[in-house]
Image (cartoon, rainbow, N blue to C red; front, side, top):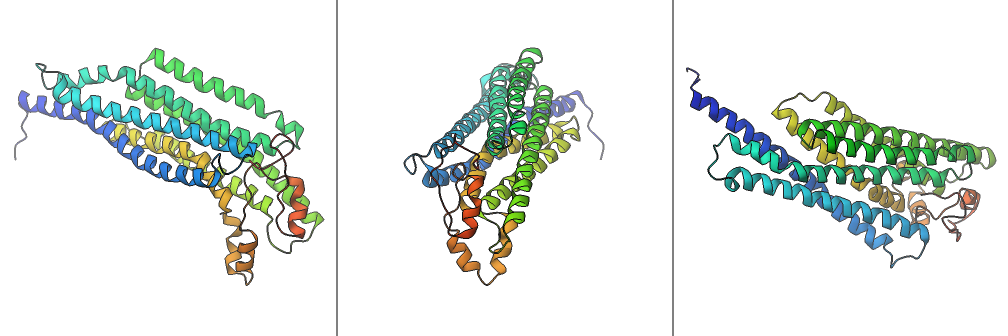
Length: 348
Protein backbone atom coordinates (compact mmCIF):
# COMPACT_ATOMS: atom_id res chain seq x y z
CA UNK A 1 0.00 0.00 0.00
CA UNK A 2 1.61 3.33 -0.99
CA UNK A 3 2.40 5.84 1.70
CA UNK A 4 0.55 9.11 1.43
CA UNK A 5 3.13 11.93 1.49
CA UNK A 6 0.90 14.75 0.33
CA UNK A 7 1.15 18.09 2.17
CA UNK A 8 -2.33 17.59 3.60
CA UNK A 9 -1.31 14.23 5.07
CA UNK A 10 1.86 15.70 6.60
CA UNK A 11 -0.13 18.55 8.11
CA UNK A 12 -2.56 16.02 9.59
CA UNK A 13 0.31 14.00 11.11
CA UNK A 14 1.84 17.15 12.58
CA UNK A 15 -1.52 18.19 14.00
CA UNK A 16 -2.08 14.77 15.58
CA UNK A 17 1.41 14.83 17.12
CA UNK A 18 0.82 18.34 18.49
CA UNK A 19 -2.56 17.40 19.92
CA UNK A 20 -1.03 14.30 21.48
CA UNK A 21 1.57 16.43 23.25
CA UNK A 22 -1.00 19.02 24.30
CA UNK A 23 -3.82 16.73 25.44
CA UNK A 24 -2.48 13.23 26.05
CA UNK A 25 0.51 14.17 28.24
CA UNK A 26 -1.46 16.16 30.87
CA UNK A 27 -4.34 13.68 30.69
CA UNK A 28 -2.08 10.77 31.68
CA UNK A 29 -0.61 12.86 34.49
CA UNK A 30 -3.96 13.92 35.90
CA UNK A 31 -5.33 10.37 35.74
CA UNK A 32 -2.33 8.95 37.61
CA UNK A 33 -2.38 11.70 40.22
CA UNK A 34 -6.16 11.35 40.68
CA UNK A 35 -5.82 7.64 41.46
CA UNK A 36 -3.10 8.32 44.03
CA UNK A 37 -5.06 11.26 45.44
CA UNK A 38 -8.08 9.01 45.99
CA UNK A 39 -5.83 6.61 47.90
CA UNK A 40 -4.42 9.54 49.86
CA UNK A 41 -7.94 10.62 50.87
CA UNK A 42 -8.56 7.16 52.31
CA UNK A 43 -5.23 7.14 54.19
CA UNK A 44 -5.75 10.66 55.53
CA UNK A 45 -9.26 9.74 56.70
CA UNK A 46 -7.76 6.81 58.62
CA UNK A 47 -5.25 9.18 60.19
CA UNK A 48 -7.99 11.61 61.22
CA UNK A 49 -9.86 8.79 62.93
CA UNK A 50 -6.82 7.46 64.78
CA UNK A 51 -4.70 10.56 65.36
CA UNK A 52 -6.98 13.58 65.02
CA UNK A 53 -6.78 16.62 67.30
CA UNK A 54 -9.83 15.42 69.22
CA UNK A 55 -8.14 12.08 69.99
CA UNK A 56 -5.12 13.37 71.88
CA UNK A 57 -3.67 16.60 73.18
CA UNK A 58 -0.09 15.28 72.94
CA UNK A 59 2.22 17.75 71.23
CA UNK A 60 3.86 15.05 69.10
CA UNK A 61 0.45 13.85 67.90
CA UNK A 62 -0.57 17.37 66.94
CA UNK A 63 2.69 18.04 65.10
CA UNK A 64 2.39 14.81 63.13
CA UNK A 65 -1.22 15.54 62.28
CA UNK A 66 -0.29 19.09 61.24
CA UNK A 67 2.50 17.85 58.93
CA UNK A 68 0.16 15.32 57.33
CA UNK A 69 -2.56 17.95 56.97
CA UNK A 70 -0.20 20.38 55.23
CA UNK A 71 0.95 17.63 52.89
CA UNK A 72 -2.69 16.76 52.14
CA UNK A 73 -3.53 20.40 51.40
CA UNK A 74 -0.56 20.74 49.06
CA UNK A 75 -1.56 17.51 47.31
CA UNK A 76 -5.10 18.88 46.97
CA UNK A 77 -3.77 22.07 45.42
CA UNK A 78 -1.62 20.07 43.03
CA UNK A 79 -4.64 17.98 41.98
CA UNK A 80 -6.64 21.17 41.35
CA UNK A 81 -3.82 22.62 39.23
CA UNK A 82 -3.63 19.43 37.18
CA UNK A 83 -7.38 19.58 36.55
CA UNK A 84 -7.13 23.25 35.56
CA UNK A 85 -4.32 22.42 33.12
CA UNK A 86 -6.26 19.65 31.41
CA UNK A 87 -9.36 21.88 31.26
CA UNK A 88 -7.43 24.74 29.66
CA UNK A 89 -5.77 22.34 27.22
CA UNK A 90 -9.02 20.78 26.03
CA UNK A 91 -10.93 24.06 25.81
CA UNK A 92 -8.18 26.00 24.05
CA UNK A 93 -7.16 23.26 21.62
CA UNK A 94 -10.70 22.38 20.54
CA UNK A 95 -12.98 25.37 21.13
CA UNK A 96 -11.16 28.37 22.57
CA UNK A 97 -9.20 29.61 19.53
CA UNK A 98 -11.63 29.91 16.59
CA UNK A 99 -10.36 30.91 13.20
CA UNK A 100 -6.89 29.46 13.70
CA UNK A 101 -5.50 26.56 11.65
CA UNK A 102 -5.60 23.12 13.20
CA UNK A 103 -1.81 22.90 13.50
CA UNK A 104 -1.39 26.27 15.26
CA UNK A 105 -3.91 25.63 18.04
CA UNK A 106 -1.71 23.30 20.15
CA UNK A 107 1.18 25.78 19.96
CA UNK A 108 -1.04 28.62 21.16
CA UNK A 109 -2.43 26.33 23.86
CA UNK A 110 1.08 25.62 25.17
CA UNK A 111 1.64 29.38 25.42
CA UNK A 112 -1.53 29.72 27.51
CA UNK A 113 -0.34 26.96 29.86
CA UNK A 114 2.99 28.63 30.71
CA UNK A 115 1.85 30.48 33.84
CA UNK A 116 -0.23 27.61 35.31
CA UNK A 117 2.75 25.29 34.82
CA UNK A 118 5.01 27.69 36.69
CA UNK A 119 2.51 27.68 39.57
CA UNK A 120 2.47 23.89 39.43
CA UNK A 121 6.27 23.87 39.59
CA UNK A 122 6.24 25.94 42.78
CA UNK A 123 3.61 23.69 44.36
CA UNK A 124 5.73 20.70 43.37
CA UNK A 125 8.77 22.24 45.04
CA UNK A 126 6.80 22.73 48.26
CA UNK A 127 5.69 19.09 48.06
CA UNK A 128 9.31 17.96 47.79
CA UNK A 129 10.28 20.29 50.63
CA UNK A 130 7.55 19.06 52.99
CA UNK A 131 8.58 15.44 52.47
CA UNK A 132 12.23 16.27 53.12
CA UNK A 133 11.43 18.31 56.24
CA UNK A 134 9.43 15.42 57.71
CA UNK A 135 12.27 12.93 57.32
CA UNK A 136 14.83 15.45 58.64
CA UNK A 137 12.63 16.16 61.66
CA UNK A 138 12.35 12.43 62.31
CA UNK A 139 16.14 12.08 62.28
CA UNK A 140 16.52 15.09 64.59
CA UNK A 141 14.24 13.63 67.25
CA UNK A 142 15.98 10.25 67.08
CA UNK A 143 19.43 11.82 67.42
CA UNK A 144 18.86 13.86 70.56
CA UNK A 145 21.06 11.53 72.60
CA UNK A 146 23.79 11.74 69.93
CA UNK A 147 24.77 15.40 70.00
CA UNK A 148 27.49 15.31 67.35
CA UNK A 149 25.28 13.62 64.77
CA UNK A 150 22.40 15.92 65.68
CA UNK A 151 24.42 18.98 64.67
CA UNK A 152 24.43 17.79 61.05
CA UNK A 153 20.64 17.95 60.84
CA UNK A 154 20.31 21.74 60.88
CA UNK A 155 22.75 22.42 58.00
CA UNK A 156 21.04 19.65 56.04
CA UNK A 157 17.63 21.26 56.59
CA UNK A 158 18.89 24.71 55.59
CA UNK A 159 20.66 23.37 52.51
CA UNK A 160 17.67 21.34 51.31
CA UNK A 161 15.24 24.24 51.78
CA UNK A 162 17.48 26.80 50.09
CA UNK A 163 18.42 24.48 47.22
CA UNK A 164 14.80 23.48 46.49
CA UNK A 165 13.48 27.04 46.48
CA UNK A 166 16.44 28.41 44.51
CA UNK A 167 16.15 25.66 41.91
CA UNK A 168 12.45 26.26 41.34
CA UNK A 169 13.01 30.03 41.14
CA UNK A 170 15.82 29.75 38.58
CA UNK A 171 13.90 27.36 36.35
CA UNK A 172 10.72 29.47 36.49
CA UNK A 173 12.51 32.67 35.38
CA UNK A 174 14.95 31.15 32.88
CA UNK A 175 13.19 28.65 30.62
CA UNK A 176 9.55 28.79 31.63
CA UNK A 177 7.67 25.58 32.32
CA UNK A 178 8.01 23.55 29.14
CA UNK A 179 8.50 19.79 29.10
CA UNK A 180 12.31 19.96 29.15
CA UNK A 181 12.46 22.31 32.15
CA UNK A 182 9.83 20.23 33.93
CA UNK A 183 11.92 17.10 33.40
CA UNK A 184 15.09 18.88 34.55
CA UNK A 185 13.34 20.19 37.64
CA UNK A 186 12.01 16.73 38.45
CA UNK A 187 15.47 15.19 38.07
CA UNK A 188 17.10 17.84 40.25
CA UNK A 189 14.37 17.65 42.88
CA UNK A 190 14.50 13.86 42.93
CA UNK A 191 18.28 13.80 43.30
CA UNK A 192 18.16 16.31 46.16
CA UNK A 193 15.31 14.50 47.91
CA UNK A 194 17.01 11.13 47.35
CA UNK A 195 20.23 12.37 48.94
CA UNK A 196 18.29 13.75 51.90
CA UNK A 197 16.40 10.50 52.42
CA UNK A 198 19.57 8.41 52.13
CA UNK A 199 21.27 10.56 54.78
CA UNK A 200 18.34 10.51 57.21
CA UNK A 201 17.70 6.78 56.68
CA UNK A 202 21.37 6.10 57.40
CA UNK A 203 21.11 8.11 60.63
CA UNK A 204 17.96 6.21 61.62
CA UNK A 205 19.70 2.91 60.88
CA UNK A 206 22.62 4.05 63.03
CA UNK A 207 20.29 4.76 65.96
CA UNK A 208 18.56 1.40 65.44
CA UNK A 209 21.89 -0.46 65.38
CA UNK A 210 23.19 1.30 68.52
CA UNK A 211 19.96 0.71 70.43
CA UNK A 212 19.69 -2.94 69.38
CA UNK A 213 23.33 -3.55 70.29
CA UNK A 214 22.90 -1.99 73.74
CA UNK A 215 19.71 -3.92 74.43
CA UNK A 216 21.16 -7.27 73.36
CA UNK A 217 24.22 -6.68 75.51
CA UNK A 218 22.21 -5.69 78.58
CA UNK A 219 19.16 -7.97 78.61
CA UNK A 220 18.71 -11.38 76.91
CA UNK A 221 16.02 -11.56 74.26
CA UNK A 222 13.04 -13.50 75.55
CA UNK A 223 9.95 -11.91 74.02
CA UNK A 224 11.20 -10.80 70.63
CA UNK A 225 11.65 -7.19 69.52
CA UNK A 226 10.44 -4.48 71.86
CA UNK A 227 8.10 -1.72 70.81
CA UNK A 228 10.91 0.81 70.38
CA UNK A 229 12.87 -1.64 68.24
CA UNK A 230 9.81 -2.29 66.12
CA UNK A 231 9.24 1.43 65.56
CA UNK A 232 12.89 1.95 64.62
CA UNK A 233 12.69 -1.03 62.29
CA UNK A 234 9.58 0.40 60.61
CA UNK A 235 11.30 3.76 60.10
CA UNK A 236 14.38 2.12 58.59
CA UNK A 237 12.32 -0.17 56.34
CA UNK A 238 10.09 2.64 55.10
CA UNK A 239 13.11 4.86 54.48
CA UNK A 240 14.92 2.16 52.48
CA UNK A 241 11.79 1.41 50.44
CA UNK A 242 11.21 5.10 49.78
CA UNK A 243 14.83 5.58 48.66
CA UNK A 244 14.56 2.58 46.31
CA UNK A 245 11.40 4.00 44.74
CA UNK A 246 13.01 7.40 44.24
CA UNK A 247 16.16 5.82 42.77
CA UNK A 248 14.01 3.79 40.36
CA UNK A 249 12.11 6.90 39.26
CA UNK A 250 15.37 8.78 38.77
CA UNK A 251 16.87 5.97 36.67
CA UNK A 252 13.76 5.80 34.48
CA UNK A 253 13.82 9.56 33.94
CA UNK A 254 17.45 9.42 32.83
CA UNK A 255 16.62 6.70 30.29
CA UNK A 256 13.49 8.37 28.91
CA UNK A 257 13.84 9.35 25.22
CA UNK A 258 12.94 12.79 23.85
CA UNK A 259 9.69 11.90 22.13
CA UNK A 260 5.94 11.84 22.69
CA UNK A 261 6.27 8.51 24.48
CA UNK A 262 9.04 10.00 26.62
CA UNK A 263 6.89 13.01 27.52
CA UNK A 264 4.05 10.69 28.51
CA UNK A 265 6.45 8.67 30.65
CA UNK A 266 7.73 11.82 32.36
CA UNK A 267 4.15 12.93 33.05
CA UNK A 268 3.21 9.59 34.61
CA UNK A 269 6.42 9.38 36.65
CA UNK A 270 5.96 12.94 37.87
CA UNK A 271 2.45 12.18 39.11
CA UNK A 272 3.60 8.93 40.75
CA UNK A 273 6.52 10.61 42.46
CA UNK A 274 4.47 13.54 43.75
CA UNK A 275 1.69 11.26 44.98
CA UNK A 276 4.10 9.01 46.89
CA UNK A 277 5.95 11.99 48.36
CA UNK A 278 2.65 13.43 49.57
CA UNK A 279 1.47 10.15 51.12
CA UNK A 280 4.79 9.13 52.69
CA UNK A 281 4.50 10.99 56.07
CA UNK A 282 0.88 9.95 56.59
CA UNK A 283 1.49 6.36 55.52
CA UNK A 284 4.51 5.93 57.81
CA UNK A 285 2.53 7.40 60.71
CA UNK A 286 -0.25 4.86 60.24
CA UNK A 287 2.21 1.99 59.80
CA UNK A 288 3.98 2.87 63.05
CA UNK A 289 0.62 3.27 64.76
CA UNK A 290 -0.42 -0.25 63.74
CA UNK A 291 3.03 -1.77 64.22
CA UNK A 292 3.35 -3.38 60.78
CA UNK A 293 6.98 -4.23 59.95
CA UNK A 294 8.92 -6.86 58.07
CA UNK A 295 11.12 -7.80 61.01
CA UNK A 296 8.24 -8.93 63.28
CA UNK A 297 6.22 -11.03 60.84
CA UNK A 298 7.76 -14.22 62.23
CA UNK A 299 5.59 -13.72 65.32
CA UNK A 300 2.67 -15.16 63.36
CA UNK A 301 4.43 -18.55 63.24
CA UNK A 302 5.02 -18.85 66.99
CA UNK A 303 2.63 -20.46 69.49
CA UNK A 304 2.48 -17.19 71.42
CA UNK A 305 1.48 -15.12 68.40
CA UNK A 306 -2.05 -14.45 69.65
CA UNK A 307 -0.85 -13.37 73.09
CA UNK A 308 1.92 -11.26 71.58
CA UNK A 309 -0.51 -9.52 69.27
CA UNK A 310 -2.85 -8.87 72.19
CA UNK A 311 -0.07 -7.53 74.41
CA UNK A 312 1.16 -5.23 71.65
CA UNK A 313 -2.31 -4.15 70.56
CA UNK A 314 -1.65 -0.60 71.67
CA UNK A 315 1.24 0.20 69.40
CA UNK A 316 3.70 3.01 70.07
CA UNK A 317 2.79 6.33 68.57
CA UNK A 318 5.58 8.31 66.98
CA UNK A 319 6.74 10.96 69.39
CA UNK A 320 5.45 9.16 72.48
CA UNK A 321 8.28 6.80 73.40
CA UNK A 322 11.72 7.31 74.88
CA UNK A 323 14.60 5.02 74.01
CA UNK A 324 15.47 4.80 77.69
CA UNK A 325 12.09 3.23 78.49
CA UNK A 326 12.85 0.12 76.45
CA UNK A 327 14.08 -1.86 79.46
CA UNK A 328 10.73 -1.45 81.18
CA UNK A 329 9.04 -2.58 77.97
CA UNK A 330 10.94 -5.87 78.06
CA UNK A 331 10.19 -6.59 81.71
CA UNK A 332 6.46 -6.02 81.65
CA UNK A 333 3.50 -4.72 79.68
CA UNK A 334 4.13 -1.78 77.37
CA UNK A 335 4.59 1.41 79.34
CA UNK A 336 3.51 4.78 78.09
CA UNK A 337 5.45 7.42 80.01
CA UNK A 338 4.23 10.97 79.85
CA UNK A 339 7.12 12.46 77.92
CA UNK A 340 6.77 15.60 75.90
CA UNK A 341 8.25 15.86 72.44
CA UNK A 342 10.81 18.41 73.52
CA UNK A 343 12.05 16.57 76.62
CA UNK A 344 14.03 13.63 75.32
CA UNK A 345 14.86 11.24 72.51
CA UNK A 346 11.59 9.91 71.17
CA UNK A 347 10.36 8.05 68.15
CA UNK A 348 9.03 10.37 65.48
